[in-house]
Figure 1 (tube, each protein chain N blue to C red):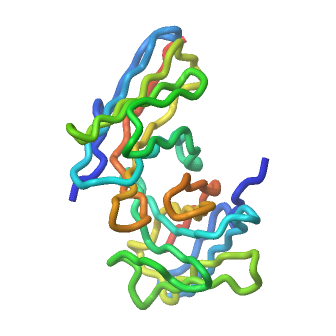
Figure 2: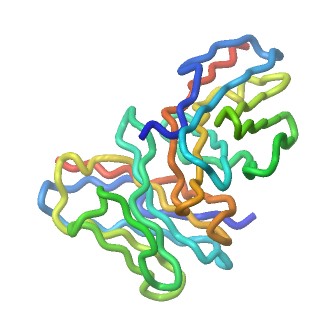
Length: 111
Length: 113
C-alpha cells in the first residue's frame, strides 16, 4: 500500500519564507513521525505526533494531524538555507511497530 | 547526546559474498530495527528485534538475511549471499519502546558489484 505519501514532491522557496509539506496515509495509525535527510546522509528524527494529538510544536516546526482525513502537515517557519533537505513522513500502524515511509518532499531553500 | 552508530559507512562487495553490517544502538533502548533505502526509492522496513528475537519482518527479509545481538551492545545484519539488488543504504534504528520515536544511525552504503 502507498502509506505515507508526501506532497509536494519538491518545494523551492526563498530563505525566510515558511515551508509546508503534507502527508497522507491509508491505514489506522498509532503515531506519525517526520524525519529529515540531507542528501545521501542519515535519517534525523524531527517530531512524533500520536493519533490522539492534533498539533505539536518543536522550535520552528509545527506538525498537525487530522486522523479523519488521514493526513498530516509539517510547517517550517522562517526557513534557513540549512533546512534544505528531503523530509519524510513515516507512520506506525496500530497493528505493528514498523515505520512505513513516504517518498519524501525535497525542500530547497534559496538564500 | 547518545547516538546510534553504524559501521562501516561504505561497504563494497562482490555478488555472492557475505556481508555483515554493524550497529551500536543507544544503550537503554530495547527495540531495534533495520531498514534499507535503494537509491532514489522509499525507505523500506526489513526487520524489528526485541528481547533477543525477531518480532516482525518484511517480505524483503528472506532466508538470505539474519540479525543478531551477540553481546548485548552490537546489533548486526548479515546478508549471506549478496545480490546486485541488495545495493542500498542500510539504516539501523532503535527505540525505547514499541510506539515511541525511532532513532537512526548514519547508515551503511552497500554496493554489490
